Image (cartoon, rainbow, N blue to C red):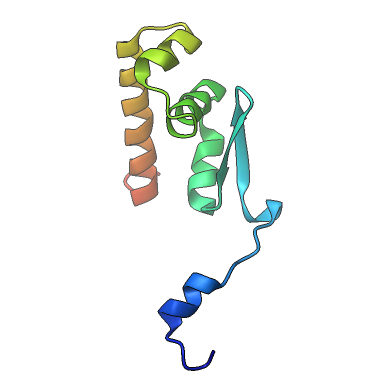
Length: 98
């Protein structure tokens, strides 16, 4: 195997994942596992409803209308809230908001 380039070795190797390697966030029976410590710390600061909104959108891949039905609010309210949460996440990740 020493003659294989590193890029080929990456394709045949595996890395073990352990529960301690990520922080889990759950909503509606679904779990979002985050291994990036900075992002996980920011997610922990979100309200339960904001975490739920992100899990419904990015784990279950529901659209705003479907999320609105589940969270009992309008599609436009979900869209505004999601946009606001993502904007704040982005600012925190880039260091613009400390």
